[in-house]
Length: 226
Image (tube, rainbow, N blue to C red; front, side, top):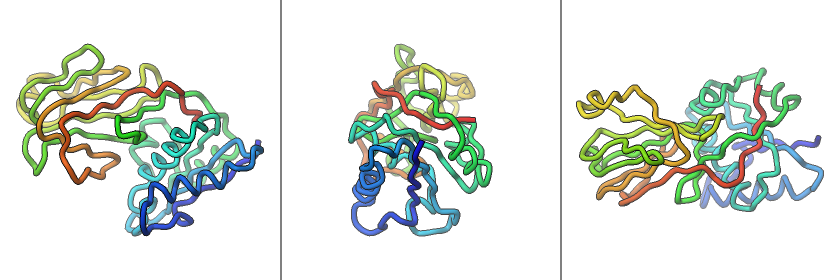
């Protein structure tokens, strides 16, 4: 096994960050001997680059680059300095333990969750109402109706086991009556309405959409797990 490290500190922060990450990934996997990428975001949560400010967003961009270039045969290991939503979702260590696992661990096929904007989900996504308003519309997890009407929002997380994702309602009386602490698992979740803001790894989109779908990609992710 041969691996390359991709650190957020080595990715340009000006211009199109997503394109910069894609170019960095392409450079590292150009050698056919490279079979694993070790994703190592910055350790400073107050930093200005995407990896420092949100390490899960950096991991999602790296995996997204592999997905878009059809190179999901490359294994991915995650070395986060601190616990994140992604490390909790996949049961990953952080710090020195994560680096040891990244170099010596075994990759396992896990469901890869992405949205209809070709953005990969590794930690947490939310569907929210625009401008702080209630989320109006309806949402389905596979064939199960999660809500119809108005709620504060919905939370979506990937899972290492099939079917691939879980979601629940967040906040408000409707959510309480519907049992918001109950997770609903499925292969896909779709929300429709007039004012949906998609929050990906803590970063909210700058415009509202009328529909957003998260679903399991047809090719799994090869993730190094404990």
